[in-house]
Image: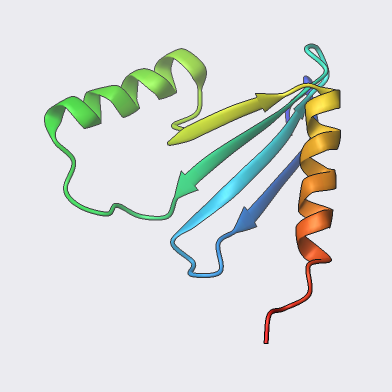
Length: 91
């Protein structure tokens, strides 16, 4: 956790291949959600390797994908997840 980040969480996928990293950035008052891959799916091309290096050099993190939520969107996202948790299983 760095000085700009209030909370860091990692949620691994049930299959164990991927995961979500969730960070709260105090300065922007935003939630960052990024998808991580554990290991490599296939050999990377030179261009893909260069892209990952650029992401690390420029942003400090090699995200596969990322979304940034403000508080309102975060609340809607959480409400949607809670709604999905309450859906009864179909017979």
